[in-house]
Length: 235
Ligand SMILES: C[S@@+](CC[C@H](N)C(=O)[O-])C[C@H]1O[C@@H](n2cnc3c(N)ncnc32)[C@H](O)[C@@H]1O
View 1 (cartoon, rainbow, N blue to C red):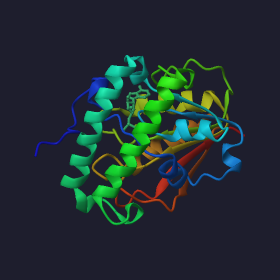
View 2: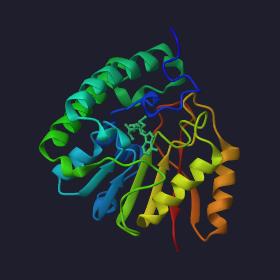
View 3: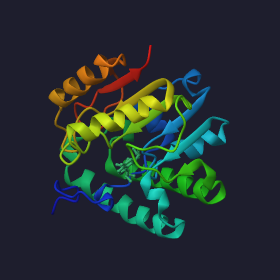
View 4: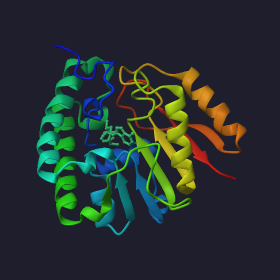
């Protein structure tokens, strides 16, 4: 099959709009209840169920993604296609993934993602104020707006099409809107390749400006080898 996430595309429409679940977010970022006590930003939110479930349990969560500029009906139709596209990709490359978090297989993985998409869709339609159309590196939030900023599967994942300068600008923007921690996962690209040079360059650039940078482990692993996240905070 052809590669649905082939490098070279620069248009936003070429990024997969994926739908990870709240539980996947908790596992990826190693989140505790205390971590979710303050204001939380998910950027990019995509079709993830994180914000929907978080708001449902009283977390002050907001998702930001340029795809939220799309009319809801159009976005939800696209998500249905993206679920198929994402499932087809993971099935076609099954050996690149560790399936243990999904009862051993692609069917459960697809079910989890479809359920998360459904929760996202319901919340988007019922409470659209939690979904802000915005694109890094320019977010419409004041400095220090969030206690926790989560960013999954855009930076590093698309290192084939987002250059170092754009990564740096995006990370600086996430740090700007955070008064606590910024967590970015994973630190591998979409093919599962580690990107240590990129991580090192960005760590050095941000560190030189006083941002505290840590590469931390996570117990979650779906893309084989993706067991690290980047934690940024200001002293
Ligand atoms: C693979 S999805 C990840 C979504 C979600 N975090 C998840 O893990 O399910 C990548 C998302 O990045 C969004 N995106 C693309 N360019 C962006 C930008 N400049 N700023 C913020 N989000 C962007 C896309 O619209 C897409 O929803």
